[in-house]
Amino acid sequence: VGTNNTVNKVFHVVSFEIMFTSTPVNIEKGLIVPIHNVATIASSASVVEGVSRSRNALLDGETKRYDWDSGYTCHQLGSGSILVQLGQPYLLDSMRILLWDCDDRSYSYYVEVSVNLWDWELVWDKTRENCQSWQYITFTRRPVVFIRIIGTHNTANELVFCQVFHCVHLECPAQSEDVASPRLEPRPRHYSLPTQPQMALVPLAAEAKEDEV
Image (cartoon, rainbow, N blue to C red):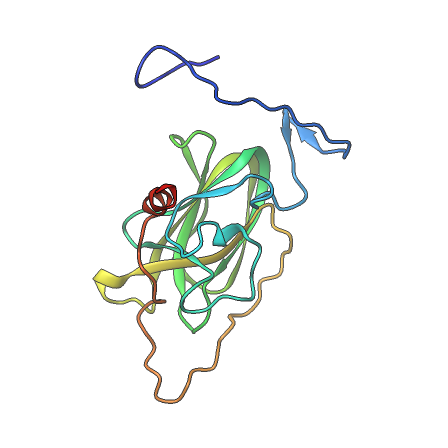
């Protein structure tokens, strides 16, 4: 039943699918309580907002091969966010993220969740702490469709015009409670560390338009 259309008074459905599985799943309040990570491309999750050389780098499961140039998703501090849409509503109570950790920088951030993009609930607040590498996040179980990660500080980006928040990986529910120490890569002698990983800050929306052309 459609309830609103911003253009006219017609509700349109482009496609409709019914899925079947013989694998038992835990159902609570009409929603699946997943055991395995559902923030994956295979589970139809996608990165809606954020900047990356690869659109779904945040969801590809790669937690080892990333560097200064690739393997992460980012957003400008004070503007935008990293926004992920899951393939369907799930009941979740945990997630885990990997902050970019190729040097000794620290980040501050917070996480919000929503089912409709209008009403947001704060589930994790680390805006007054310096955080590094793996982050194990827990909260009261609730329906989730959208996950918004917003960085508020980066100790390596002190200049206002280049303040950026970088995230390598997201999984939900968390597949481990381990919080590893930062992965510090050796720096070559006389190497001047840049203020941020080098990449073109091109919004995902713009990237999508280029792909269509």
